[in-house]
Structures are given as structure tokens and as C-alpha cells.
Length: 224
Length: 91
Image (spheres, rainbow over the protein chains, first blue to last red):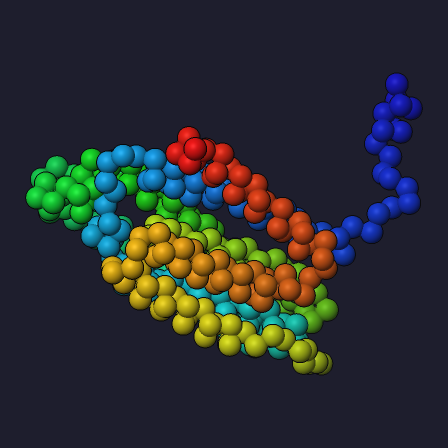
């Protein structure tokens, strides 16, 4: 029995070369693959609900602050370029620039989350909540006067899907900022060299993925 | 000792992304366009931006082909997931 188990567990011989990247990077890409499916489930649910219901859906610009979020999108794009500049800096062996660009990335990410919290506070104040339009709110009164424009009948679906999608994305950005802070502190201690900067590259992959997801979310949730 | 590597022009990619975002917002407010064309244009612009991030910032353009395939595998699955559940509406 033991002998048979040992045979099953034996690695293939000769050993395969793999995909030609180090384990941490491969692990991150596999994780990002699972993240694609996670966000597909959220975005797919939104698409199905939005285009599946017969009642009118609110025009995003009637409820959401599109210019503010366009600015936030620009912020995230800026933080993505600062991240890749940090990667380029350590690839060239420049410790000072690595620290500077990592700090810029953390600031960009933190500002994105800050703007999102401000946006949530404004939306909740106007009456747009995860459960739909709050009774007696400014938005509920507008919706009562123009139910088509404000999607009165589908406001509950809109609220729940909007806050779930953007909330989970914001959670990812927050996790990214925390991880980036750890990488920054390690960089300050000289933890990365021109010979080994795997941590910077791997956290960068996560960060760019979060940016990429937002590019899709911004279009689908705020513009269409 | 510092050794400079050849890197893609990241700032140029950033400029492209900023311009495409501005174009997206402008297109979204063109209310005279038919809804379907508006949606297709916005999705096209979003995919373009996503590709720029994946190819240049995530370096997929420069990675081994096997890794690029691994990264692309979930994409058809994502499309299948949405279309399969939408089939009731489509057919």
C-alpha cells in the first residue's frame, strides 16, 4: 500500500521545465485567474439582471457622479504607472526611485479608496442605498416624479449590484494598499536588490489587475 | 552597481490610457448615438485599455508564451459564463 502511494506521488520524469517563470509569479497569475472568475460572477450577475429585467433601469449619470469617478479612474491609472515605474527602478538597481514610486502608488491607491468612500457617503446621503432608494430621500422624490429616468422599479437591484461590485473592488484596492505598504517598508530596509525584486513584481501584478478590473467596471457600471 | 535596462515607454502608455478614458467619458455623453453603437464603442475602448495594461504594465507582451496562454485561459470561460446565463434572453 505504502509502495503504491509512493509511486503515485512520484513527480514526472524527466522533470518538466514549466512555464519559464519563478514560482511566486506563476502563483500570482493562477490567483489572478481565479480573480477573473470572481469578478466575472459579479459583473455577469449585473449584466444579466440589468438586461434581463423588463422594467427600465436608471441612467447611471442620473444617480451616480460620473465626472468624480472618471477622476478616480484617472487616479488609479496614475498609480498603475507609478507601480510600473517602481518595478523599472529596482530592475535598474535604483533604490531611491523604487521607494519614491512605491510611495506614490500607495498614495494613489489610498486616494482612490478615499474618493470612493466620499462617493458612497454622497450616494447614501442622496438616498441611493444597497437596498434601493431610501423612502423620503431626495432621490426617491425625483424617482417618483420621473420613474423611467431613475429606474424606480429596479432601484433595489441596481443598489445591491452597484455596491457589491464597487465594494468588492474597493476591498481589493485596500488589500493592495496594505500589501504595497509592506513592500515599501521592506524596500526602505533594502529588502530588494537588482538581483532579486520578486516581491515588487508580484505585488505589481496584483495592482495592475485591480486597475484592469476597474477599467471594465467603470465602463459597465458608470458609462453604459 | 546600477545597470539600466531597456523598458517599454510606460509614460506613453499612461498618456494613451488617460486619453482613452477621456474619450470614453465623452462618448458616454453622446446621447444622439444609437444605444447599441454606444455600448459597442464603450466596450471596445475598455478592452483596448485593459489590453494596454495587461500587455505593457503586466508585461504579458514580454513574458513566455506559455504564461500568456495561462493568463488568457479564464477569459473564454468568463464569456461562456455570462452568455450561458444570458441564453434565456438571447434565444
